[in-house]
Length: 495
Image (cartoon, rainbow, N blue to C red):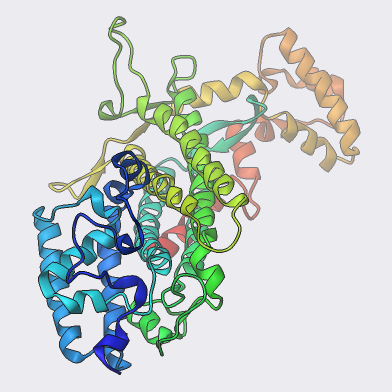
């Protein structure tokens, strides 16, 4: 096949080079694009972050074109040489991004053509910007998901560290924000480990569907060139667990699909919801009315007017940023809902919300891992700072809410009462304790026996906070023995 035959119609301007002041389609039009439209339609100043993915995809495409005899070995070598120089220029900050060239793809192609001439023009053979951008975003997002997976692991490790240090600390467990039952503070922290574990699993699942190759679908209908799309997929690492290349099977769907971006943003939204729930608890626990924890000063701010204030700005801001990420999810779903097949310019609007979601989630996970678990001191090899727990304040709070009432009901059930009868009996006991302004464990035995004669002296063991905690020694329960078993499971998983 000759070089002339190998030059695709949509990638070869009528002049010798892709002019940096003209679009790739300019020969068709009788007047230049207005400056207003250029600014309105340009994406280069936000999509330039895709440059590494764009170059990686182009190099894999060029290698395949050469292997298939669609371009010459000399052209392939020139493209490699030119891309190496462009990479160096971008990394050094010397590369000039031009608004006139609209996006990352045309900026790189124009510079490549300046550097290597016609070989640069031949690179676009058998592809379109439609499948090119879909590939770039998938490659970029795949890398970001890997980074997010690492950050989720770091946050889980921080939570496990705090849990391990506080297995025996008793916290009031709440329902409806009312004191319900005593729980181990370590057990409470491990609830968030479970949440972030699911988030990591969701991210891995999204990665699998993201890691699929659209390149070679061209504009929408495929191409007449004998491409080896599986080869490109393998070169780019777009393979399944068995190493088999994974390629989009329908060209129309390949160029217009943004499900992977929506799925990622949905997973990110749920992860941020978990961060927000943790934030809410940290904010409440840090308040003077609770005083359960302190957060290291470097994660708090003061007041411009009230010198006594120490504000939990990081958790509050994370709680607010959750709404921002969830808003991006709604935006992406709305973006796609009315689009006919195949590619439409609307899809340019997918990048800013996706980019911001990635940035927000990464920043949030990174700061929470340190805020919760502390910072490693190189001198001691231990983490310092992070959350400081006030065990005494937590235990005093448990005593305010008759948290062992259910334990008394369970005690009576074991003595032979039906649970509903035991429940009613304990309600009377709680009412009496309220009247005397004391805890159930402080009621004299004679008073307790007045509610039911089966109550004996051993009742005080089940009415104690420690006894209540230790009694819940079933799988998934809050007993310290169970918490330590869960800690061992998480340590092994996160190793």
